[in-house]
Image (cartoon, rainbow, N blue to C red; front, side):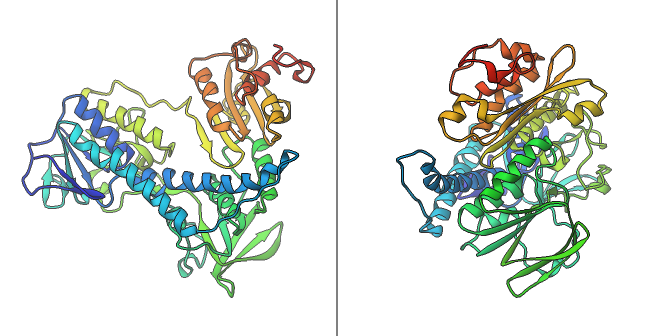
Length: 481
């Protein structure tokens, strides 16, 4: 019997359904993608979930963070509008509780529309409430037992906690709890300079919180150093204190709230704040699955090890999404789960391919990338050429009176095939998709330079950067190629 959806989650009747062709563990984006694809292939599916349906993205990740980040941008732009002469304006946060309630309403609405309400629309999917666990006979969830001949594990990931001495003795925030605060702290220490640290650090700073970001190397270590350095400067202009190259010694309770002892350039310093946000990555959510007993191998960080088909070391069992520790983005989770399902049901005919995967950081300006960095390309033994175009040479930025940012392209020497692209710009998130298509289809920077782009757009900067491989863009007139 099909599940009956009630409220935020799912309730299932006590009556057992027919033996499923596929068992899917996890009810986030990857789990739903797997179940829906299996239904499309005519398979019967047992979709096992514990807790709130919808997973990380809609409940505690992408959706709540991006709506609050956008709110912080609106607040900032109320003041930033003065960059246009003759305009005087201001904006301020007057009701944090109301803003959080609006965020919660959005989350609840999307969770209902895009998850709970979808299950009855697909034949053959039966939701089972309970924590899944492998056994010698197969799988259990709640009071039910299932065969485990074909399984897709899509249980996601949880915030990682760094091994800083004393971390267990302080009340720290994670990305989950930071997005559910009932009041804003006066000051916030962010440990970690990756995507989450940069996004939430800038967001809280724009809401009036005194923010300090600390990291062991530099911000956005997966991005080009020129881009990371520029973003560091822009965050500092927003009032964020950024301390890079630190070595963590100990964290403890302090008079102001928390105190972090660090070593910077050989000097011992103490950084204090009312609250601390741990933003040092995520770890696979596999507790309770009993993977070892099932013969499912994991890597050093506990993520499920998979091959190019997303098959695990256990025959018939596949894994997709954040639980594999790779490419932890919601769209990659959905893509991987669909692929894993097809391979589980029809044989290993599809290979996981992330060479043209876009990555976006929703800071302001936005950081976006696809393909190889210059260092990655050289490490692969490729001879490369690069072009860096300051946003000050993009007409859109000049007209908007906002020239923060740059574009960097990496091309193979000789063929000029585009290998990688990175954009730091207020509209960089949307503009990167052109480079995604170029890399996916093996285009060259010459192809980009000879393509028509609309004038006074940020994406036109890709054409200008591509032209930079053969010309001095500063000597071109408007729209001249």
